[in-house]
Image (cartoon, rainbow, N blue to C red; front, top):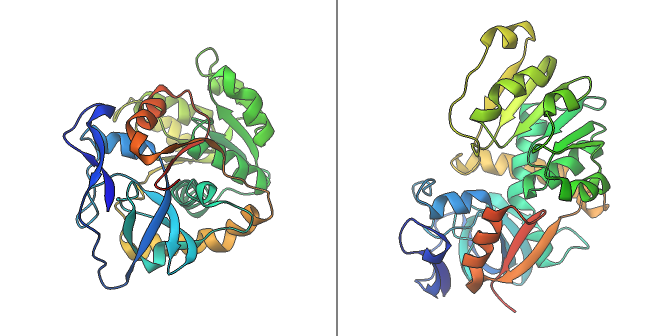
Length: 310
């Protein structure tokens, strides 16, 4: 089969679409014939040598894919290996392709759906009537979180470049803040109950400042650094909490539980059209380097999807 390999840590040009051995499934795994794979920031970090795959995971990038298993259309949450023609997947991490979606659209869902649901719902417990602040609203995570927050009855505030504001309002954001020109703390009138944060260190104190009493911050990315100043007194006074999570390195049984929750609670919303995958563009998998360059420019909105076929 062919897969996208990383010759050495570096820029997008270290990615090559080349012949590699076929995957050998372990007990409890099946082999998916890949049609499409979503591109995620974690793939970029892996390419740079900053986010190695967990033990036992394929060395090729790709944390979500769609394709077929014995002729049945599926999509899957992966620990790696999605940028390939075939990938071995634990059965508990398979999802049916939601009715009405193409395989390319379905490839844009597993990683973002599992990440957002596990953090915003399972960890932070977002409730109807609360305010959800989503950083990076124009990303794949952000566009999904806006829609899920709205579907759950929350008021949604998102941060994004000005050029993306109109589309994010169409997706359900009540307020979009241009983080290059506005202070999101002042712009989030009344504060936020839940903050979904992809930035990390540089936003740490301001995320606390924007919280209401009893607020919850869930940090899932470190694009703004690994450390930052924090006034613990403010956190105590608000009876607030900060949780930091990753999805890729979780045990298979934990991932299976999350996938089951997404299938039960999120897939009906997708099939009803309440939540839709936002795909900026599709590209041949052989052009993974160009896809990574686009991802790093942040000029896209939603997901970039690589096609293994067609």
